[in-house]
Image (cartoon, rainbow, N blue to C red; front, side, top):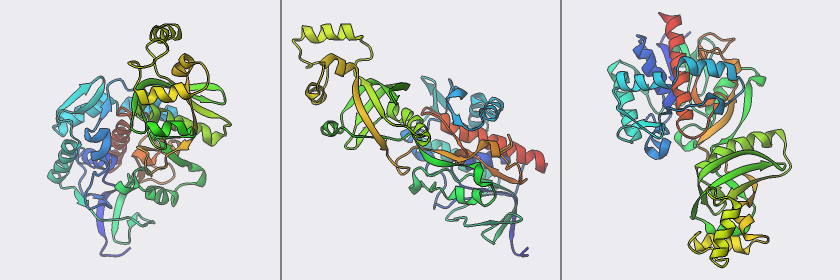
Length: 387
């Protein structure tokens, strides 16, 4: 080993949500000689984008069954050990961030992601943690030598998945992980929480219009899942939280092989068909005052019964937008390849946390909660082995 290598107890690769929290928890646990390596000029770029900049930290009504993973038992054990309550206490009492809950969604009271990032960076600076920016990790050699210049007792790969690559999470984490894991330990990545591409051309003229509705994912003539909320028409298809919630499910089914797939839109989920028909007939068949004229024009141009079209407006899915547009990456290193402390089972001292692991959840703080829980578990495991 080179004599001039800079030595640390723990090096964390990636200054995103999970990486920064891991460093904070390590410092809280009394670990010193910690470095965070971030490829961007500043840490936390993607964190600032979450929740449309408001940073939805977690969810008071978190349901672990809504996560997708390859090892539900381990995930349930881990979230049970590091639940939402632990997250909130750490943010409030350790990082001194006031929190507010809106319909179960937990935010910083300022409703600004920068509040969270600044608090984490201040805590790390106050505890002597080094954050080395503009540092892209190209290799980790035996003995945990990083880029032939840094050595560590423990290495945490927390570089994110492959969504929003301009933020730094461009899939490079998987290359680092693959050098140490087995071929069967990786699940091919795919976009999760992403917009849908739609075949029907008549909706292109609706680009920019929104509607509150119920959307049902239908695969090979079977209803698979439904979501209610605001849907946005776009020049390529449809978007909105209700659509994104269904996109990961669609992509997982697509990997297994499917023949037909569509979303069926109920434009009046608060009315049954009989009541809606009476209302339309009362208006002489006009939809004015019920729908935006642009949307009603498209509905009326479709063949078939108008009311049935309003309750079952079918759109054929041709695919999803790519990882550049996805909020979250599905797939990655199997959770089953890790201990509950997030360490590779066959390689003591090498850890993987956050989005690089095959765990993803719906909108509403689920994916940040996974970032925090996996970071807590990793940091506590390192502390247990180091102190």
